[in-house]
Image (cartoon, rainbow, N blue to C red):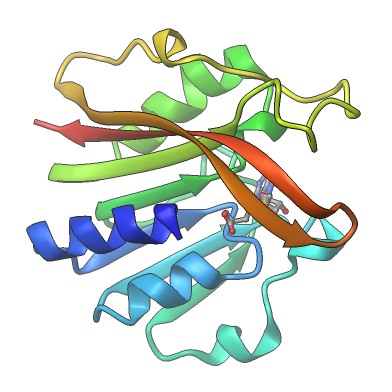
Length: 180
Ligand SMILES: C[S@@+](CC[C@H](N)C(=O)[O-])C[C@H]1O[C@@H](n2cnc3c(N)ncnc32)[C@H](O)[C@@H]1O
């Protein structure tokens, strides 16, 4: 809800017509963005059985789905974007590679005044501690290239209820980076 509210706020404040949804999962953020009239490119490597991009969204007139790895920095979009979404994906990437190469690569894909939003679970999130291969971040890890600023950073504890964990809480950190 909170992430959706943040996206909704951006759509109300800015003219957003192009969205890149990285690690799109089940496509709920892609569909939400398309509901505001944006054209969306959604990318996921489909590596998680519980987070498959649904077939019915692959034929959505405003959403283009690409099965690809967001670590592939040769992906060529032939366009730049007003909004880039990176929700709950970066814990699965090698931290140094993400901060030094992947993040700058996708920041370059923003239009002027475009926004990259990302969220990640903090290391005390109860659903995260069992998997030792995850990467954890804090706000001060995000040292940005010249020409970009953090316009918002917040953390919250949110209730959730889904398989396989049942009712549980997530400790979520959220950042908006803007190209100035
Ligand atoms: C926890 S889900 C989050 C999905 C969606 N962003 C959301 O917030 O609802 C993480 C997603 O990232 C995708 N993913 C993880 N590593 C990836 C990679 N290297 N390239 C593309 N997708 C990746 C997974 O397949 C999964 O769909």
